[in-house]
Image 1 (tube, rainbow, N blue to C red):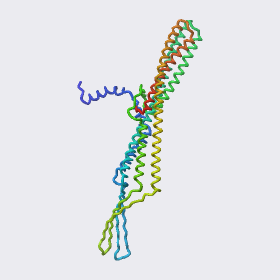
Image 2 (cartoon, one colour):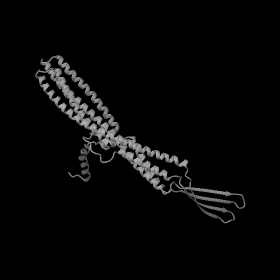
Image 3 (cartoon, rainbow, N blue to C red):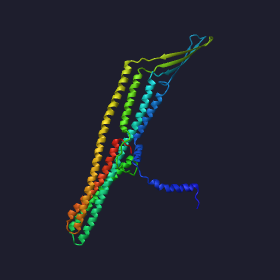
Length: 397
């Protein structure tokens, strides 16, 4: 059977589709999905557009859009020789010395600040996504632990029932074993509900059903924290606004170009062209409030940067300590679980040999399964601590 080019393409796509469908979801994909669903992305995009529009305005040749003046006068004082005067004018606002360069510097700084703010806002969304993914991982570990405990107690309950039927154990032992089994089943149901709630919150945040795994270890950041970079860019933009206020001590001067025509019956037409320069004065009641506002913005931006720098340093130190503690706790819980599992195996052999009572066996099984559950929780906690460390370092997924 021969297959044409189009048929071969369809077969190739069909063969590749399962491989493409099995591509695991990454944390970066989840962040992008949450970013697209939130209103913060729209707000930040508007800030970037406004900053770029300001740069376009600052790059114009004129300080403000030119204006056209039109006027006409008709004089009927003399009925035999009425007069009509027409005047056309063009007002062109001019940049003050150094003002256009200052405006361009301010506009460029605001574009950079808006872009840095967008990166910082995306990192904030990444923090929410990381926490939501960590919560799902913790609840999944909890559910897996309760399921393991339920299986252990179900096997034990069946064994006890068999021994009761054989006359080796009393009926009270079967009742105790089944009571423990039912308690484990109830705990498993509660864990399932908590997991379902965490998954619903994840879906509301990202619109995705799959939840990616958190990173196993942190990496060193290659650049400064996006939030700190945004604060620095805001300081630069505030400094440029002060520069603009210093170079704009008065309103823009205007060059006025006028053309005048006078028409009279029985007399020759007259024409005239004039040029005028309008220079506003710069007074203290105009300049001082503008300069004070610009300086206040600069001081506030600088204080915000200093405060944020200290805050980020404290968060990074806290996250590093938390990750180290989580790693040590995982090691301790793993060692403890190994010891308790070995103890439970020994007590189980003793129980089957009739040398250990059922309550001791139940306590040993419960302790071993709880220790294994603590290991699963410690693993999820370490992944969460690592994710928080990357967040404190300013690393995007």
